[in-house]
Length: 202
Image (cartoon, rainbow, N blue to C red; front, top):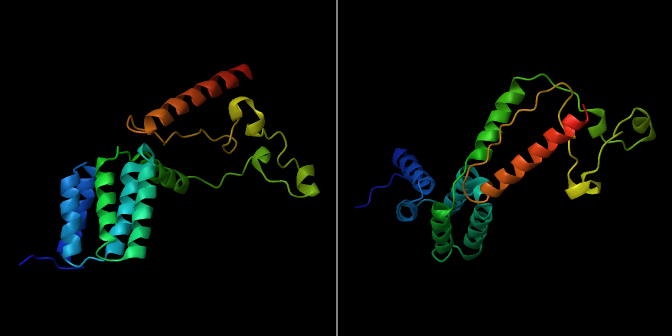
């Protein structure tokens, strides 16, 4: 007999094994744990939700297609039901296992949450405020804001988007895998342009 205590300790151990197999880039182990759970009576909709989580948490911007594929697999299951819809979940879990991995956004998000909790509430700088009324415009809301699309390469070099006096943290650190390689290159390039523009304005 195949043991599986739906909703009990073994259930959580098995979903943990699935998540760790995807994170560890083992497609066969990922498929094994997925099928074990489906065979044991796990709700395929729950499995689909967990795959959306994996795509966001462990793959992130290294391969943004993973999140879209996880959402598509969930929708396919809703349309087809069991057993046909389960094939889309299998396709998704194999893709997730083989996708490049990055938890850079996951880490940056959690670091930013901690950072915000340790800060007082800083005012939004005047140039970043919305100015829908004449009074607000008279108070300099939005004054000197640089519209990025009107700047060379749609980038307002040297502009500051942080509250006054705050040292900007850099929590998002792209990994050297997948699309984040290009994101890292672009981020480095933009930071360098900003440094040069700010030195000019000193």
